Image (cartoon, rainbow, N blue to C red; front, side):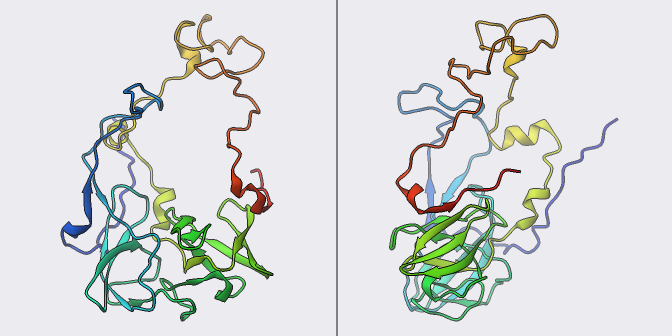
Length: 266
């Protein structure tokens, strides 16, 4: 009999309290469907019911000290979140950095003390410092390096730009007026977690994935043949007949002009 090999995480570091009710939002499940009701993303559906936490990625409470009053689990993202109570009485959720515990004080300012959790403009952050939740446009909130255990690194300051190495090894220019949080995102051990069983995958809202070559020809371009047959065509195709070998899937983006060096292939 096979044993369950699922890896359990240590959640004892989390605060035993209910989520802040004012910062919760109920969202309807989409299950991979567009507004028309047609499935546009396969293998999604089911899963636990989740309440969305309103996380402040912009961290716009400027020059007001905040105290960490809770470290909580968020089912909608890979990292933990912290509940911060500011001096004016306002409470907000933020991404939890490593080495930040309940009772610590953090601040968002144009120039602040260089310690995990503090947020400031990238022009005031020294070379070699790990950062996360980085803005692309000033005042639009953090967009880059927000996953569990990730961080970017300041490489150089040049004119009105700062060179930043992303978690993917891509090097790009960020405007020096953009804000970023000092430190590394919490929960770095998540990448070592093993699902262990199919039921856990279903609880996460992920339905079974079937190989195209295991289907019949009407259901997939790779289908048909006897036994474990190859795809039987000059190049792989998607279920909708589009070429899928060596085709770039990244859309042309206006931020491409800020890329200095593409990510290194493994």
